[in-house]
Amino acid sequence: MKVILDHLVTNHYWILLSTFYVFIIYCLVCVE
Picture (cartoon, rainbow, N blue to C red):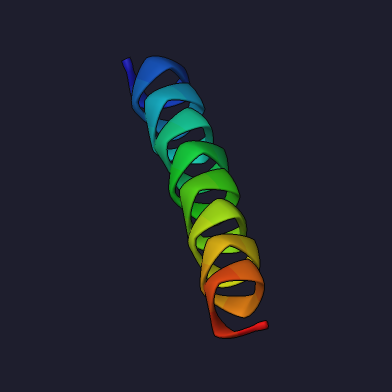
């Protein structure tokens, strides 16, 4: 069970990280 939870947390972490990077790039493009 713990392995499954860790796997989900890791996946969500990467999804959040990817979304954050896309947001930053989007802001930079909008500013320029």
